[in-house]
Length: 115
Image 1 (cartoon, rainbow, N blue to C red):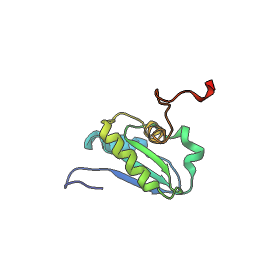
Image 2: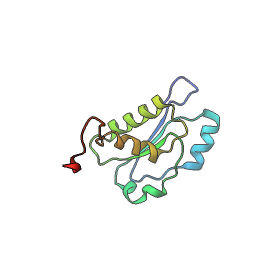
Image 3: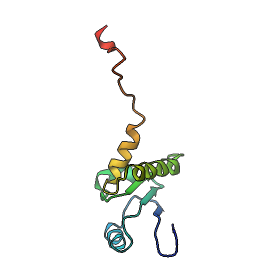
Image 4: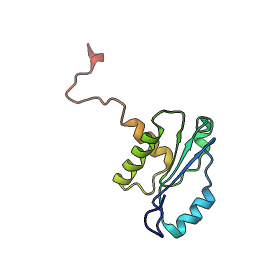
């Protein structure tokens, strides 16, 4: 994805796996700066390789079988940009995003286990 004639706004890879060209990506980022990199894994390889995926800043992989994977990817990248999270790994970005859906206990709510 381009943004002007010399700038890279981001790179999205759609593939049958969640492999990441980490050495090549780091080399390009030395010249172009830290731009978002995303993989949409169409076959679900991410589920088997989640812990082995290189943890590079502003790089994230999402499973492509999820109907809303493009929305999830967009929201994760927007969240990371809003937080200025240029050094946060993709796994942490994904966990932070999923965490926003989890219910939170409120100080105003009584603990139901005390009944």
